[in-house]
Image (cartoon, rainbow, N blue to C red; front, side, top):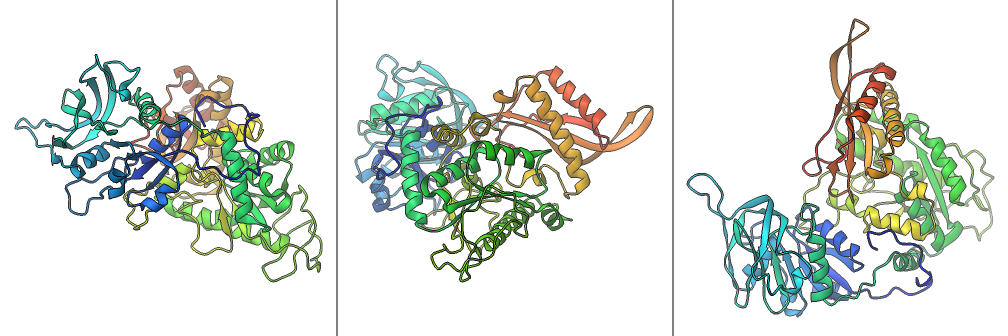
Length: 581
């Protein structure tokens, strides 16, 4: 699934085609926060990739049909006691190996070289340490190695390391250097390569080309990973998982849940019922727009559950963002369980028979017929489908390791991952769990979904609960809805919507003094957030025109009485996150 948006292909395998053994480049996860991004960059080159635990056994990896191995970065030092090491099979397999940052130091350390901490100079400046932008130079530009095919002799990169290689393993040589690192790239003649910088981040402009060279010129990949193949294989997997069970699909109106619904519907037809929950945390007029769009484009069973008071009552007095996410996540599940009981009866009881129409059902089950005594009627739903994606998983620290020693830190618990209750009556169906947002959109196009759904800006599952800083109240929500409406109205009017990953308003927990009509005011401060990104893992703040920012700010303070000050967030991710909470 490549970055240029694909059109549906006539050569894609049929839905009933068996899953094929894709050629795979496996990324071993040593805890680096950009490890998932390496996987995404590989897939952009039409090569399948999976992020697996650093201690994954060969029997697990062999099933993926590996063509190469990448060792990710990580926060440890290779010489520390207990530092994660690459399994022996990595070097015994004969496969090409690319080590990135910590992975490069593992290559040197485990193949007989020596890695040491970089000492401080007497003047306080680092020696051998580099964090941030640097320039690397090919050691022999007249005879470039395959990794640098088609690339210039000097290239900007993003460095991040505090250790250095002091002795190379036998057979290795320097392939590139920087002003502060004579061994910025190392390699041997067996396909072992180490990079002291991060090719996966946008701050290394030629990093994607280097990875592509590794995939095609060193690993010998052919590129057999497309949206069409993903759809066919995922449909088969859903059928195998669900069988004749029933599925409730958590529909939010965003692209993730819409693509999930379309995939599951293609696999099992009317065994799926979509439930759209109005939790009182949505934007202005959003419930009506979601239901209308769904009815026009996705011809599936739909239940509209109106649960505003329930969510807001549970959030009363709560200020901690992690607690907000967990409350929203658990309450969603409880609503879905109740809807399943009302529609189909709890397990062990007769269920209502017949096809559930595309209707609006109140929480009490309005419009439902009497229970069926037909012994052939399906049982209560066994599964809940939701649009969990790879960034949700990695930021929640939930992708796991075989030893349980997850080296990655939890950034925030997404409501559909870390926010799920430990006990629930559903099994999960998550067909997008290992896709990035651009891949989800490619799949949506492959499924024939309209662009108004596919290219809608992301909206967080906990909704405005995490855009109201501090306690969530009805008054604050109404103020934020009004501000957010103005932001989106002006962004679209200026033709900026398609240029941005997200644009929205945040109601801070800060008040400020102002003057309006010669009178003192004491109102809320609203922050504007607009970012550009290729995925949710990294993002940069958008350089919106000053005139546009001025127009948005002027409208907010004039049209929203509770607000008297507007600020603009110019923090990138990292170090910040896109959402404030």
